[in-house]
Amino acid sequence: MEPIPESGYYYPNKIARIILEALEDVMGKNGLNAVLNLAHLSHLIDNPPPNNLNKEFDFAYVSAINLALEELYGPRGGRGLALRAGRAAFAEGLRNFGALAGAGDLAFKVLPLQAKLRIGLPAMAKIFTQVSDQLTTVQEQEHVFVYTIHRCPVCWGRNGTTDKPVCFMAVGLLQEGLKWVSGGSEFRVNESKCVAKGDDVCEFVIQRTPMR
Image (cartoon, rainbow, N blue to C red; front, side, top):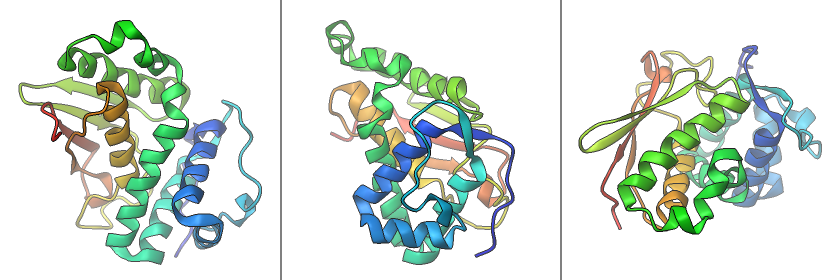
């Protein structure tokens, strides 16, 4: 695969490190190394980003990892791994970030479900907007929440190259985040718009009623 040109937009090293650790958890060290080699990121093998909040991990690297998953494992296999990695990334590290850390407090746990979602989803969006160059907004509608990434690292540089949404790492992260915020419920998250298939933003529609 061709390298994706660097964007000049960045994730903090800490979030990149969490993503790489999550990928290693779901696919093993050899699997992760194969992905990094294909993504032209072999310098990261046995050399993860430092555990700090410096914004130094280019969006193009996140996108290249996502594309390498698809190329190595096929669309379906890559999708499954990206979903699992997204979920693991939230479970292993992102839930301890800033505004979300309070979701484990008793005062939050006793709130009604819709109130938890109304607080928790914007808190997730705010973390990424505050600590990275990812711009995210949340809109509340009657039956759904719409979570929109206006500058998406997962498909950076792939504008209009596919006919289907590809940001499954973001879907997995949202699914696990909603599970954490809600106290254990699973929600349907559907990527309705994706820059990789020619849309202007990446948009995720979240049903307000949990599946279980």
